[in-house]
Amino acid sequence: MQKIGEDEKCPTCDRNYSSATQVDTDLKENHANIFLGLQKLKSDFLGQMEHRLSAMIDDVMDNLHKTEYPERVLMMSDPSMMRDKRKATVPGKLPEKEFRSRPSLLTEMLEVPHIRTIHHIFIAVLCLVMLHTILTDIIETNTIDLGIQRLMDAFYKPLTTLRILISIEFFALFLLFPSFYLWSTHRLNYNQETRRMIDYGAVGLFATFLVSFMYFPARALLQDRLIGPASSCLVAMEQCRLLMKMWAFVRHNVPKALMFDHKKEVTIRGIAEEGKVGEEKDDSSPSSGLLRKRVKTDETSRTRSGLDAEGTTSPLNENLHLSGPALNGPSRKVMGKQALDSWISWDDKKSPCPSFSRSSTIRWNVVCWNFAQVFGCIFYANMVVGKACALYFSKFGLPGHPMTPSMLCNAIFSLMLPGILGLVFGFYLLLHSWHNAFAEMLRFGDRLFYKDWWNRSSFSDYYKTWNLIVHDWLYTYVFKDAWESGLGRRYKVLPTTLVFLVSSVFHEYILAFSLNFFLPVLFILFGGFGFALYFKNIEGSAGNVFMWVGLTAGTGIIVSTYSMEYFARINCPTENEGSVLDFFIPRTLSCGAFQWSQAT
Image 1 (tube, helix red, strand yellow):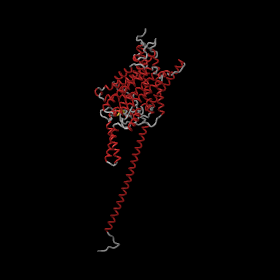
Image 2 (tube, helix red, strand yellow):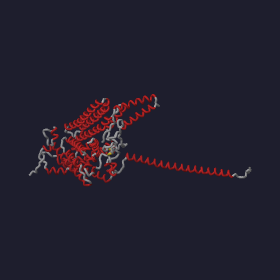
Image 3 (cartoon, one colour):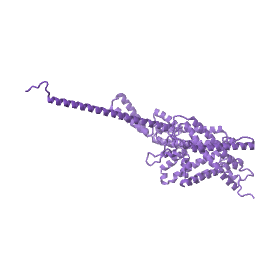
Image 4 (cartoon, helix red, strand yellow):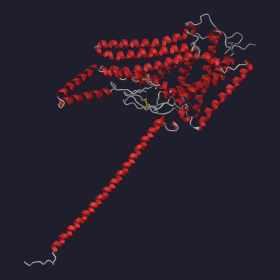
């Protein structure tokens, strides 16, 4: 073999060296590309994470801002903000009440300068009316009254009124709630036949309680006739409010108590105790894990069914929520606390565990301003409506002051404007200022107590948007129950008729026991003509004009007729004063104050 010299080169070695150098260069390039790719991936990932995190934080901050300070846009521009019903989760059921955090419509509208100017005009007119009253009183009587005496007569005997109010609150809270709690928890300790007898007895006691709750306050108002009409109106309205609250409480929670399975509760308790013993003996045993899983599944299904779910307290309102009974000690204590919390809540949801956002703080300046507007509306209505009624009917029934048909017609049309103003004052006083003041103190988020009823073109829309608190109660516990029971499927008009009947009776009840006489003018106008107009629909501006004409004429007739009867009972005393018969016989027709033919 030929020996290669040291200074001679090997071709094979050169090729191997070149290949190794090329591989090393490729690896370095690949490493550099991978590193650059990782750097780019890192920068892209961090950029996307920063973008997503920033978007999430902005979204959370926006939601918090909306919760604490609702949007400054009018709810009328966003139809979803005006929606107060949601589709039922069960097929074949009617929509249910939906709560969300939102302000009252007028609260937002008054932030618009043009609408706020109208509010200022009413205040300016009040100042002018006060100035006119002051000058008239100084010229005629050398004193300044400002209608204060009429207010004192209207709110006469405030301590007696307070005593009656405390009594009905006591009966509602300390009789119905404990009785329901005892019935719902202890009925399960008996067999099926005894349980059925207990249930029938509970129904009879509840009916007796409702009748007594309506009878005794009404009797107190009739016996003590010196209570002012405004004070009597407070008692009658609070009585109806508590009656609605108690009915909603029982109607919402009785089905849960009746569906509760005693045997299932005992079975779950036995399984839980067995599983606890098994865990102490052998915690790693598969059977113990199976028992724990079974107990957890049973408790979860029981919670989802609303039988042992913890409710969230809420106002209107609304109304009541109470979890179903449980037999074990801790659950019974929790249930009692939940039930007591729900008794004073506003919630009227149908879900087993209702919850909705509440404001974090109480704005006491808002509370004080709303209460100031309440007193301002009372003072305003007294000076406008009270003074106008006294002007036309204060001498009705006195000898030498007959009422002719022309005078009656003139009085009715003259009182239409003060009457519709009284309607607006009552709406702003009760449905806006009063409810918003208490909603602010109770930190209740949903303040949609009414909708834009003034823009409606039909009486059917007006009834549904005027007072949402009463409308929601009538819809949930009268119309919805009647419809889902099968009554509405056969005769569609019957649930609506039932709603008008209940509403008319209670409206007339409030007026009758506020004024201490029965004159069914409101019942006829609302339950008769109002019911007929419910099915009359005129589109557009013509319908809105027709609605306002009907409201104005109706309020004029109501104010005139009830004012005549009120002053007739003052100016025309009878021998059977204070009797039940006298309560139902109109003094307007029996005192001979009408002169149907013009004297020549």
